[in-house]
Length: 137
Image (cartoon, rainbow, N blue to C red):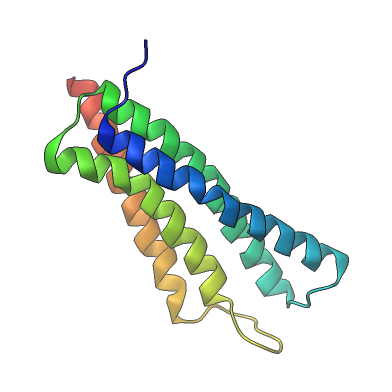
């Protein structure tokens, strides 16, 4: 029988609700593909990257919640492990979308690209915490 902690259950519920936003992103990409929404080639690439990172990292985040529980992680390390990957999903996808915003022929990211790198750090901290937790459990 699978037992899930309250912390993981609440986070899983919140993460699952973000999938509606990811669906909206998919709808937006369909509009781009149809030509209903005009974006520069750079913006199209960043929109696809933002959408893909959101979907993959949300899925990984849900799996990591189960691994954090399996490792018995609690306290601060438990929260770091549980929040790291879902936070990375939000930060990285926001970084791709927000850093490519603008009208006209946008060809390079703005300063909000830093969100992608903050997301990468969050991802690394989350998975390393869980990995070490599983090895020491």
